Image (cartoon, rainbow, N blue to C red):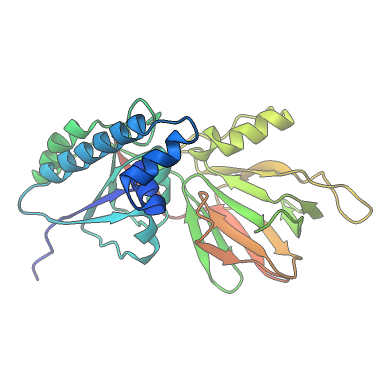
Length: 299
């Protein structure tokens, strides 16, 4: 049986310019809208052109014998990745996180089209590097790959989702999230603004801000470490709710257990993708733990 040729999957997000066109239909109308607010379209257009050149460079670097396809972020939840795929993410670091939850073990190359805008810990390669990287892969050369821990939330009915940065559990609106939280034989009923459980990759983002705000002194996990950190946001202490089980570490083989006490509106989602969520209404139980799969990022 002949194996399929490698497939290059190029992933991008619409540029700010493309999103303006989607809203205002034409460049002239978008330019007028911005000018009416003392803003210029020039920088937005320059960034769009840089992104388009980066994407063209990546497509031009794909070996001739490979299959190829291109998708945008909004299509990720409907796209079927194949075992033979090499995923090229052209955009910001968050786009790598958006892609990671849909992968098994496919290698990812992060391409930074706008180094003046994106920090680049996950998109560390310039567009010009794509040709050499793909040539090496095509020739069977082993490239250095870093494996980053991911987090998985699994409901009691078997539904699950993974994330590279963090899982959020709470109410989809600004209402209080009500639930029971259990870890290491500690159990408490909460009313809060929800909670996050982060990996070492996510520890430099949202979780880091929360940790600084609460004065949490323990080291946060490293990206490759098989452990997680969780933080409850604004737990409200009352006669029936507590605020003692509000942060901690979840090691490999352990799980953070959350039982919903929300009649409706409870959600579980990962890496800020609110449209791809699990409903978490009254009685549902979520177990959050280190995921079995990892992001395989080409260095």
